[in-house]
Image (cartoon, rainbow, N blue to C red; front, side, top):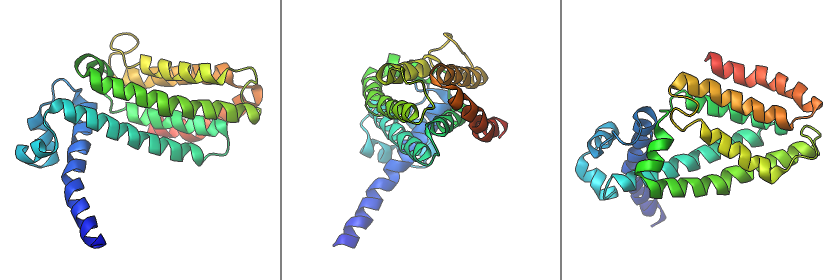
Length: 220
């Protein structure tokens, strides 16, 4: 019975994963407003009937795909940060990872999510505040304990500041309006945050890890 249940689970999950993966790819490349259910079915290599068996409408696809993608991103970030020598390397790895993600990000994505899919945006914000703020806060506390971040830094405040400043670049025409601008501004804001909280010992390590991780990502 157990083997049968596993097979049934795979049968159910296979089209769902195809849909979510395809939707994320399309949304990241073209934004959300212009993409249709036909586009998603075509990219996933499934019929519209199969698509509508999983989701009643595009709103449901957007909500589920955003949650699914964000959860996957959190898992990758957690693994990257856990496999680090200290808080500085963890944060540099996170900057490099986000830089790589931004290379294929449509600058209008967050704006369209907020404007046209408010329920999905609300769930996305809640997930950010639950997972991302906590992850950054723990990194700051670790760095303070290691002597790499200034001891007077308010971990709760700066964790929230880091989240909000990273989202600011995704508002169209506020700071950027193309992918190249998105990448350079994201790195600039990330560095501004780091220099604001690091000790001299932390700064030396930051240069070391930046040469190791971020420049490799930019060149690739």
